[in-house]
Image (cartoon, rainbow, N blue to C red):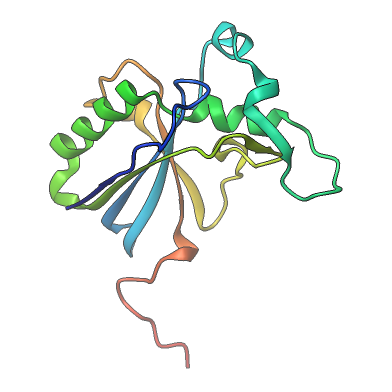
Length: 162
């Protein structure tokens, strides 16, 4: 399994600064499906304690009015370094033989205003969520979900459409 854990080059403005994804070798008839992991719930008091004026930057598209709410959710969905490390160990132990990669990157600060949060995505034909709260072996003390988009990955079996 390929492990790619990138550390920030400078101190981040908040501890909640790490994105994490896993690549599943075979998932729902597709190969190497990337699943973006995120916290789907958090303590509102923690959210209220952040210096958002230093964390959220200019709009993602210059000149466009943007709501900072989704960008705040991007940060709140991220992991602390300790949570990231716990999650990496859990994934290696629980799914190590089924994963081809685990990747973690620090968020870029300031987070652009209007950046969509993973929890804002709508499930559909190809887009869905892995709900770890329904997995009996998931015992970490923070809520976890994973977002995948099957349209981004090749089918395991090509179907001839004549």
